[in-house]
Length: 327
Image: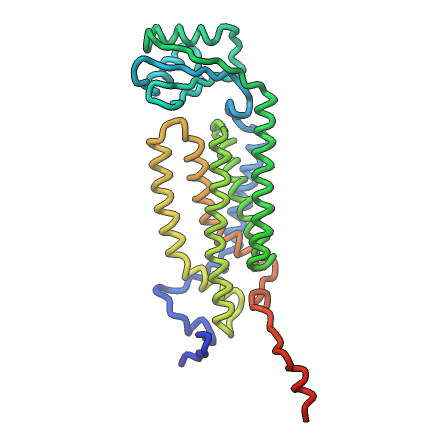
C-alpha cells in the first residue's frame, strides 16, 4: 500500500510505519500482566502486614561509637570480631579516613559500659592502640521522626509526579504512571519484609531512585504514544500503544540491562553498607521495567485513553468567524 504522508509526516495506518522487527502485540496479554501484578502485590502486602519490617538503627535508635585506629582498619574483620563477641547486629562503617570507623549498636543492646566493652574487644583482637573518640545515643524519638519523614517524602514525591505527568500528558497517563510507581514500591517493600532485610536511610534513597527510574521508562513510552497518535491517523488506541511499545522496547531493555549489571555488581561487591540500597534498586528496576508496559500504559488504556485526548487543541484563526459572514 502506498504511504499517504503530508507536511507533518503523517501516515494512514501502522502498516505504513517501518519497524526494525516484528510488531509485538503487548496489549493482547495485559490481562495476564494484571494477574501477575495483582498476585505479587497481594503477596507483598501479606508479608508487610504479617511480618513487618526489620528497621535499622536509623529508625529504631541506638548507640553510635566513633573510633580511630593506629593503622588502616579492616572492616570485614571488625564485623567478624564484634559478631563473635555477641554484637551480631552492629553496623561498622568507615567515617572519613582509612583509620576512622563508626560502630553503631542497636538500642536493644543494654549495656551502660558499652563504650568500654567495645574498646576492650577491639584492643584485644584488632588494635591495642584503638581510641574511642565519641559515644552518642540516638533515641527512638529521632528514629520515629525519620520514619515519618521517609513516608512523607515518598508520598509527596508520588503526588508531585502525578501532577507533573497529568499536566505534561493527560490525567489517564498520569494516574497509570503513579499506580505503576506504587506497584514498584509495594513489591520492593514486600521483598524486604519477606527476607527481613534491614531497612536504613539508604533504602529510602533507593526507593526514591526507583521511582525516578521507573517514571523515566513510563515517560519514554508516553512520549512515543503521543507522537504516534499525532502521526498515524487511522489506527485504534490499542494498535498505537503496541507499535509505541515495540519501538521503545530495545531502548528499554538496553537501559535496564546495563543498569542491572551495575546494580548486581554493587550488590555482590559493595559490602554490607550499601546492601539494602543495591537490593532495593535491583528489585525496583526489574519490576519497574515490567510495570511501565503492563501497568502504566495498560491502565491508561483501560481508563479510556483515546486519540483526541493526546492531540493538541485546535486554535481558531483570528477573523475566521468574520469570513463566514462575508457574501
